[in-house]
Length: 199
Image 1 (cartoon, rainbow, N blue to C red):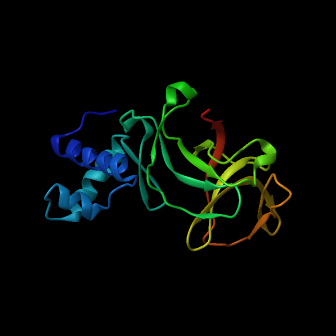
Image 2: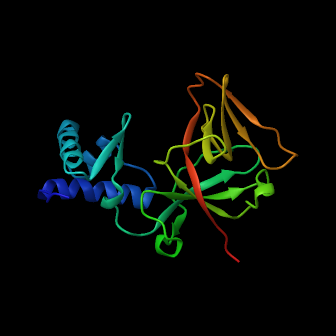
């Protein structure tokens, strides 16, 4: 990664504080206020410079921290994921998992499982699943998905169908969730790549 100017370092530090302390990428106006910059356009220019130097990247309209730019505090636990009826997503960091003990790299995140819809696969309430938002998802993969206007979050097996997507549980007491093509509220949080359990 390239060297940063003093102001670029200040902008990056502001972003890191927002991500680590509040669990979210701060808005351009938040950064401007924190650094006492008069113009949000100036902050945008610094973000573009940080992107050019590979500290940030964009996913659609959202700015994201490059995994190597993060301070190594571990994999963030960003809330709860429903193994049952979907839960309203609350993307706030609840803690961190040690990536070295898991053999995992940064850029991934953990979520705590609530409910029993995946118990047939040994995924139990209180477990943590590790999610990779960058990996390609194929039929049969275990995923974390966001549903509806409230962006409720759930963990299920993913299957593409002609009419859309089926999210399948691993417990006969729960029905599959069907999402029709063009559902603007559906998004994948990522592929589940590991599970941890505290004894």
